[in-house]
Length: 307
Image (cartoon, rainbow, N blue to C red; front, top):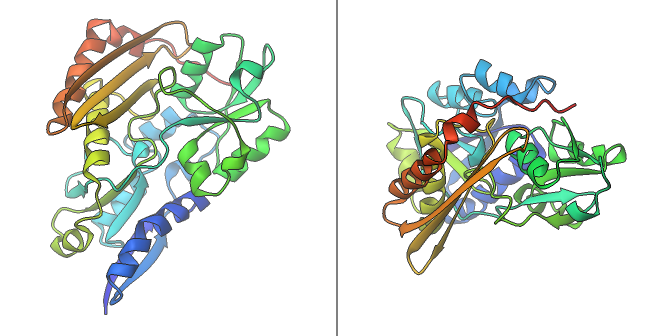
């Protein structure tokens, strides 16, 4: 019997994502044994340091570096990532397959809706983008650093007024009932690739690539490629306050890009449409519009340090 070893992080969400990805494959290939292997990442092992610091120590991948190493060392055959956690450039020898159908891309506030939060409300998140967007909308808020898996962060509602989480993760874990408000995408575009899975394999593994052919969704793939191309052009990563949201209608791809200073004092945006056949071209074009608005200066702004 053919065996395919699938790697992922250890969290409940990572396990749910693997289960989601493998469900149709198990049905299609009953003669293939799919085995799951858990890999702890630097971001899982160090939950006290700032994510930017963890990412820099891990070569730009706080939540993906050890999984990539396991793939290169042939300890696993494929890795199922949260796409937003992946650097925009593949490590040498690895390949990102077309993304499967995407889940809900929005951010969600749990605990209270944004308009209902009192002045000075304490809101939990460690994501630079979320902090910046929240402070731009509500300068009075007091972001506090929280790390850990989704259930752990939800327990912080005992001491905080609200926490911000990805809607996709809440849905995948059956915790959508705890959402107080889905943040509107026109004001709070998500991290590039949010809600999508990143399926990574070795470039020379023809067997795995053949087995996994057809798991990608062309619409999702074009959208996330545009978002990630914009991020790459801005030389950003998951620890910078960049939001991107691509949508497709009648074969036309539209990308909304946003950059906010870490302290929420200034925000710039750009939006363009193009053909879904050239998503990277669209991503680079939106990045150019942001750079024309002095994006480089915003990216160099002092970081906000949540409590």
